[in-house]
Each structure stands twice: as structure tokens, then as C-alpha cells.
Amino acid sequence: MSQPESAIPVGPPSYEPRRPTLIATAAFTLWPLLLSLPMFAGMWLASPWSDQYTAGLPFHAWSAEWFKRSGHLPLWNPEIFGGMPFVAAGSGDIFYPTWLLRFVVPVTTAGNLSFALHYILAGLFTYLLLRRLRVGWTGSVIGGLAYELTGLIASYPSPGHDGKLFASTMLPLILLALVLALRDRRWQGYLLLAAATGLTLLGHFQLAYYSLIVAGLFALYLTFEEAGDSGAGERALRGHPDHAVFRVHPLLPSCTGLFGFRRLVFVRNPVGPRT
View 1 (tube, rainbow, N blue to C red):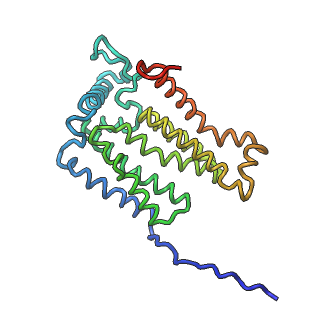
View 2 (tube, one colour):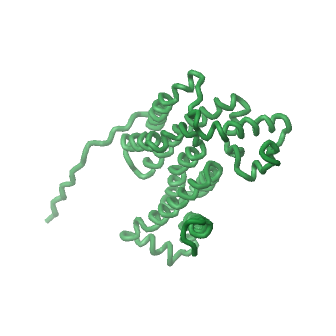
View 3 (tube, one colour):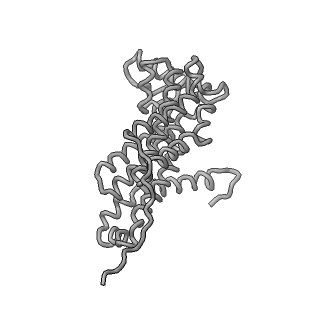
């Protein structure tokens, strides 16, 4: 006697347009362009009291002019005090790809384009991450819009924190790379992880530490997410220790950053507790 089939409710298929990624990118482009309307009127997105006026614009303009005249990167800045390191001090995001825009358009326009472009990329990278996690098209678009337009990220142009925006843009790309590398077992994920991490470090050192902490915890989650059903996490740590090293390695720089932060707060702070 055959057993009756269990009634499993099946909902309607989720909506997805014919060209999902293209339409999603258009949605991620529309709202940043509306926020960037002052840029099209020839105005600068950064406020007059922002870091761009005191440090960003002078560093960007000076380094671009130096390279045009001398043909090499400015390793030393003789204009401040008796001279200070320039590249070694991380001034002017000189190794970040958007630095090349300053050879094509004015420095202020390059800064505006950098802000607008990274807002679009922040939404797109979040969308791709959610799609890889099997979220529907509508939910992925809403998630991308929510990330790129959240109050913290949307307010970065006002204080002129372009480096923080660069690092925040790379965070969903780092998580996407981990999904490709650890869950999908694709070697391209490791290359993408290296590139996204490098761009994060070139964008903002402090946010790079936070991003690596999130990446390390997310790597652990991916390692053990299916351990209850298939024992994948146990095999990763016992049967294949080399796999465990590759899976947990994003957490190692995070631990190093935490120890450095602890020394900065508890050892070098003259008014704080000492160890």
C-alpha cells in the first residue's frame, strides 16, 4: 500500500526580470545620482568643514601635479614642516585605482565621481552576495539599496570620508569571495578575496581591521553551517587540516588587529588603564 504524499505548500515563484543584474544595477545607480545632483551643477559633494578641504584635496591635487611633472610617485612631501613621508604615510590614497581619475578630470570632479561610483558598487556587491546566498531578486535589490543608502554610508561625502566609503564598499565583496571560496569550492574566490582585502587596506586601515573581523567570523560560519547535517565542519578540522587552515585564515589578521588595538588603548593611552 503506497504512502500518501505529504502536502508541501508551494508558493508562487519569486519575481525576476529578464535581465536581473542589469535592472538591479540601474536601481543602484538611480538613487546615488539623485543624491549627487549638486555634482552636476559643478559643486563639490564634500562640505566646507570636511576633511577633504584640510587634507584630501591638497594631498590629491599635489600628488597628481607632482606625478605629471616628475613622472614618478611622490615618496616625500617637502611642503609640510621640514618634509614628511607621503606614500609611506598613506596620504592621498595614491595606490587606489580611482587615483588615476585625476589625470583625466579635475581633482574635485574625480572626488565626486569616486563617491558616486562606490555607492553604485556597494549596492551591486551586496546584491551579488545575496544572490549567491540564494535570496530572491526583489530581496537582493532591497538589500543592496538598504546597504548603499544606510545613514552611515550615505553620509560619508559630507565629512569627506572617501576612504571609509571605499572600505565599506569592499565588505560585501569580501563576503562574496568567501562564499565562492569556502562554500562553492571555487578557486576564483581566493583571488577575489585577496583583491578585495587589498583594496580595503588601501581605502582605510581602521575599517580594514573591522572588515577582517567580520570576514573571519563569516568564514567560521561557512565552515560549520552544514556540520549538523553532513559533518562538513568536522571533516574540515579533523580529516582535512589543510582545508581548515585555508578556511580560517581570514580570522588571523583580525586577531592581530585586535591585539594591536588592545595595546593602543591600554598601553599607550596615558589616562587609561595600563597592563
